Image (cartoon, rainbow, N blue to C red; front, side, top):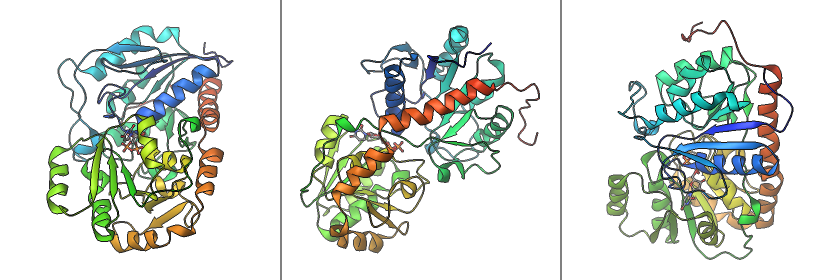
Length: 373
Ligand code: UDP
């Protein structure tokens, strides 16, 4: 029997691409951290299952050994699902299987086929938080029947992200993201510099921000995990005159010290960004966001009020947005973060989602693995 009254016992199973705290997991690391922290603050019991080597403090973590999964975003759509020997993902889910009866709800943060496939084999409901848009035919094919036969259990960041998975049946949960606003300080007077934050990997399109920096001669501070070394070297060669500086992968505290002194955050992604945590982190410091009108950032930035949405892949579009930056009130940027992206707002959305899964129940005896069912 599933308990729907609070407090709940929650088991969060992390992304299998790298230990928490390394940045390898991208924005889902911060999202997982913030939800976990806030669920604990709200009195729920919670355990995180995560890769060995995870470094977070203040959150109970069971560290699981094994070999990491390959990043979905570096593979082709038709690449078969691959599992390394001594798979970390499989080990984490084997642990979840063993302890499942101690919990009301398991929450999956992996963008991977296996946890979706395992859904009907568990007796405890599994909520799947999907952290990227559609990238893999095999994953799409398992996601649709799970969403159909286990209604309410699949959650997304944004509408544009969910729309990349055609055929999803309602109800669809859009959970957005949220941050601890106290960690981000407002800065009214920026320096003449831009920020670019993210994993350094081709889908993030760093080269366009660097091209803008070279064209305008405005310094660019780059922060984030160096995920693709050869891609980075290529950018350094092609834009050797850009006044850019790579600062490394920084803690939230260090990162916000730099971002808040920038005139704008640049988001020049090539893919449908599922959300873009970095956008709300910049807004929280009062920093406008200049972003391509593509994916999650287009649902975050209020064009002309808290930044500018630019025709995707257009450097002239970026240049024009820069010329209009004085129209933006930095106070309004901070205010948007406070009203839409606080931890409270995030906690409310996730509690509603979890509550509805627990209240209505999710098991379906008709579940079939084939997407056409
Ligand atoms: N980040 C960080 N330190 C850095 C650069 C980035 O902690 O120096 C974090 C940032 O806070 C954000 C994440 O990396 O949570 C990037 O997430 P985003 O959602 O923007 O993109 P993703 O990597 O998921 O595609």
